[in-house]
Image 1 (cartoon, one colour):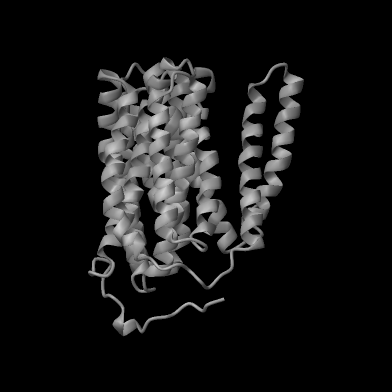
Image 2 (cartoon, one colour):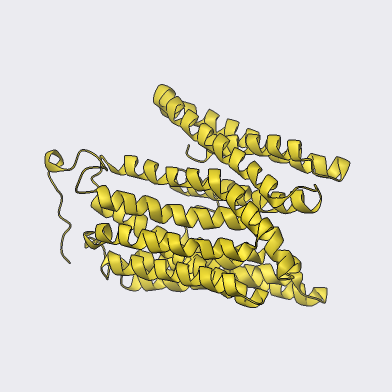
Length: 387
């Protein structure tokens, strides 16, 4: 095994925008942007495409069919960048993302649409894995936090523009044009990113042998078991639904336990608890976000373009919360982190509770309440998630 070479810090580039890193930095930001953009636009226009494809009964699978293959794509690409030139791995998954968009746009049925979403998820997972692997390997320790922070800003622009643009296109023309619109963007991203990734060096300080194969098998098992678990409640009669659900859970839990650090299910300090907390925060946020747009359109009488503005406003308050906690952390240090975590969690719960309360008490969801609740929820996540 060839040892990893460490550069003299004095000779390392002083910025992620230095000539040595510039193309890789731009390419990584663009790659994350396209993945973030397709995610938030689908959340906005999902009610329309569900009606068009007669997929209301499987509405959640519009997102699940993307997320489950993403798990496998992330793990597979993560080990492939140790074996092959990262440019090859990156380009392969970027092409899969493009093919998935084309298949979804042309899908005559919901089944074929899910195939396209699966290809998008697999490709997106691989793109993310390549980006973070190259950041870990090709940026000096002093630059890595700045690069990760810069990558996180790649979610801001899609959050600001994506909901409104996709909502208008989907309502005035067709949701299919939104998926087709990703293709020229990917065509532009590829030549901009590839020069940077061709100069990326492979990691040689760890082996991707039996452990990598084991993790890949576990990721496939996790994705399959999760699919079975989620399918179970939709089956009839109920005894069959119960058996399938329990079988899926029985396979899901052990696979997840082996993939995650030991003690994650018990929230053992420090890393296992952090992973558990971040997973629950982000998972809960995505679930509420997904069905809030659906509810606003179906029960609140709001167009998807207008409903999408709630996502935009939430993205702004999430960013504000993230910036606030970063500044707060510089002032108070680690001592203030438990309070920020609890404050963020309290705000997230309060915001979500206001949405739920409106539905339960008034049997309706009002747009002003949704916006206010989502602003509060996103602010809380912005405080707690990075902490």
